Length: 241
Ligand SMILES: Nc1ncnc2c1ncn2[C@@H]1O[C@H](COP(=O)(O)OP(=O)(O)OP(=O)(O)O)[C@@H](O)[C@H]1O
Image (tube, rainbow, N blue to C red):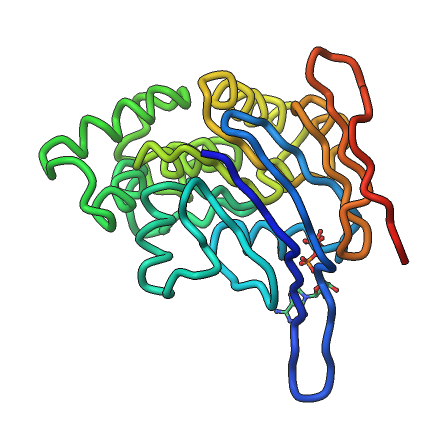
């Protein structure tokens, strides 16, 4: 599904202060694209991801994913739609500690009533195999290493076979060797046709995506085409300020 972000502005407002986190963001992401987003802390990366996934709403602007206007959806519809169409992976995994690995993966299927209840266990098992954790079904999250927990989180993100995977610093809390294993999983998903959008602080990993987007102070300052292994700058949105 094509993603179109049009003139998105995000302003956080409280009683005394306001913070302009995103200033007129425009971006097109094609189906099957693997996009990395880099930028300094506070530049607006998470704000952008939260708006793409409908976790947060833009102050202004539009987000289209396929034919769906995310900015037009009511909160209740968004969570269901997200559950069916977008897999979200966070830096600190966010697995439910009291549920087993398999139960964590089944949760989005139950929430979206995807698959027949009898099928869910098999589907979850397949996903666990895919991330290389067969045999860990009945473990609790705290019995796993960080890298293993992130693999479970990726399996959970894939539970409803979403077309888009969005990951916010998925390797940020992992050592470099484990980060490599996790990143390779995302590369594999992109190669299988999923659209992957990943925020990372790691420039080396970011340069292995198809496109790298740099955000500075809430603005896209650079979009670099990395496909074909050649760092070939295609579009530069001028930083007007
Ligand atoms: N809920 C909020 N209320 C007020 N300001 C916020 C809120 N969330 C983010 N901000 C501000 O918006 C700006 C962008 O924050 P954001 O978290 O999107 O940046 P980031 O690039 O993801 O940073 P990091 O790499 O540290 O996670 C920052 O100045 C931040 O302080």
